[in-house]
Length: 234
Image 1 (cartoon, rainbow, N blue to C red):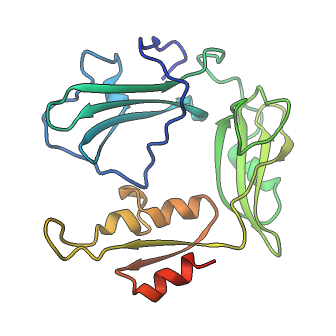
Image 2 (image 1 turned 135 degrees about the vertical axis):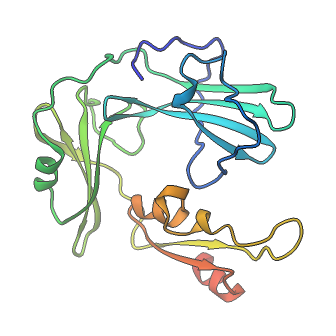
């Protein structure tokens, strides 16, 4: 999607997180509810969260993720009535990325430790994760790596000027994430909702996304009470 997308009538600066750790893809109606409301309905992901049908879009320019920019539509799950729109959309960005002078592989070769993942970002001036001032104007490679005796290191590299700008705030260390499910062997629920807690990127598994954030994660189906307490006790 380009930066020229029309601004919706209902705009909110509230940052809404509709993430891949909750919600469920649905097919209980035969059409995209955004038809006639948004000019690019196919660019949204559709989820069912509680009694709401939610369409959400993470803004990108080219391959770069625009941090903290997104649109969320909420519909009533029974009447399909539009009940809310949340938008955070920067108007100061170009429609296309500038020429990048460093590839993903070159950026990864500049960091310390073993690379876990890397993505191209346009960093937001409101960012809490990337405390780099002044806010970089160019797209940046964000490379997460594991460094012995240091834990997760998140390096920010200017993709145009090919230089390290600083470091992002890593997840708390040395904590271990815990993804669990169930028990749900009673009406109205059955099964363990495996795809939500396991290491499954195609089904938005929580363990997968915790790993993306840099956490070592244990996943457990129907854990015993003592197991749960061992992860939450202070």
